[in-house]
Image: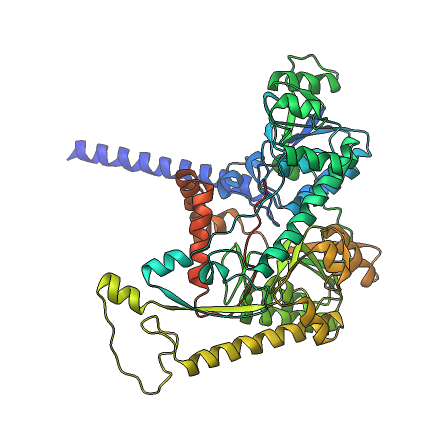
Length: 586
């Protein structure tokens, strides 16, 4: 018994000590996460802008990076990076910026904002160097602002123009005997074309040709300016396929030299007045965000910046969606807060649910009666994305923002023949009224039901046009002439009155301050960032990890097709104000 007591007490004491040690260790980790120290930047630092890192509207900070105080792997938001580039102009510890240009995960308008920030940075007389093994045009657009562009001698520059490839599913659906019931308003509203056609309609081909060439011309103009060339010469290089190797890129002045990685580092070391073998103090924007106060917040009135990124959905939505419930609350909170003097609504959305768009539009209308509301458009603010933008006091877009697409569609699925003939499955049931099962996948729509749905789509479209006409102070007949689901680029949208002016998010913030008569202001950004503990318990963060694993396993293109199929299934029976595509440029 005495031996047992000794062992028992010793085990108990060890357990208590271990528990206390674990408690204090965990407390230390929590303490460092909740009040992290600022990392030291050091001297002769070079900021690294990796274009292959996707910059969303708001920062994406991993809870594990926060927990273990590893800020370098965090991904700031686009506006954060723009403001940090501006801050770095006068930061004596930052000597230059290194652009990694092997690829670009950011959209054209986002790249445009980055490029404009780099143009301003260049005026500080600090260097900008761009380098890539193989530089696609999407990266090259940003890289053109650099003092020097280098590529790997075994690599090169892709210079072959832009293209858009659309996937059409009608043939597949025919083989499966699935008959989609399609309703739409607007001759350019091409979102349903993949389900009802085997190739682009003439209207869609026309609008796509125009906006794609607008974006391409923007690349040519910016490149010609930066490389002291002309657009005709650059266009001919693409048409003739003249740029196939790194030597071709050098020959035609698309790059300034061919260097391996060690030679690039030696070039940067020389600019820093260091020996070639010395380590270079490369600093990621994730680390820089934690090290410096780049927001320049004053002590005056408050301007709320509300980021609306993703598909517009009914209800709450997740972190990559614009849930009507959540955003109505955010706008209402800003409207009712007397300390908030203006609202900047940053929209980066291809649209989505028409009902959710209407709910958000209504809250913008109420907010505008109380204080200035300014919209800043990102890569997309189209269809439902334009619906929630059109009522603002002032609307800013980037030159290449994809906007407009004022139209509506709805898709229902008749899968009777698929289930009957392919699977041998039949349906039967009872109902209390003729239209009680309207929208069922087990049967086709009747003619009266088709009339009901088309009338509903026409009514939503009419309401949409009225919202735009009221917001833009235009006649509804004129709005109808530029609507019809047609897609417009930011520059053209100004000419037809859908947008007030081109400008960045910072330009929109400055405008809001002027409208609110604020000479000194501070900004607050919404939705608010979650704490590391909230992130760890948030299911959407684990889903994001699963998505990354799936992309790694099946590839980005296959994953994109899977996502499009999922988005299509989510639109069934829900009237949509949605853009027909995401433009992925290379």
